[in-house]
Length: 286
Image (tube, rainbow, N blue to C red):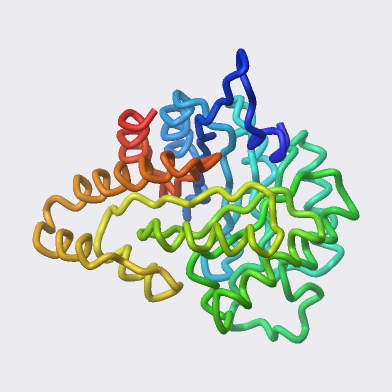
């Protein structure tokens, strides 16, 4: 099922259905063994995800799900949305890969620029920005294209206004849905949502949720991106270090419920390959 269909609100008996669609993100294990990930996905499958997104390795790494991995995960009867970045491949390699993804029967892809590795000269890249990748995918395949959004602005953008202009360019070139970077302040998302809509961008915007698992993890995330961590949450994590999972889960439950009350069409969970917190959150909000 394509993105535009997944996030289209439907009516039943004349009543519009506002139940948000659930999606999960997982990443390729460093050792290449996806057997444990299969077990986590089998647990998460109980919540009828509309999508499971498959990431690249972080920081420009080449660690990624192979075409064979994608086929195996798809055989779990899951609707996949592989990530694809344009900074580690030449044009011919990119074209070959996206066609291979489509030939698997996969309908959706998340188009990202990706982190540029230190050993690559950006001026030598065939594609330097995500909008160029969106344009290529639209030209070479029939894949439905998701793109990234940044509620507090991309770390390389001068400000949020500039960042949303780049987002509009991706949409104009063929994006069908926006999946946001994780955030911990819903007001940041609501203001972002309003600014995006005011610029004439009307495709679905799906908030990204990452349940806190450790303070170290969150400190790393906030050092690499524009992500505001509330003082109240930070204080609780520092005061009760042995209760991090509990604090993180309870915070995410409140965050998700507030987003549902706002009327979001979906919730996209960054699971970090763990099903426990996400499952508990869903048990409390669905």
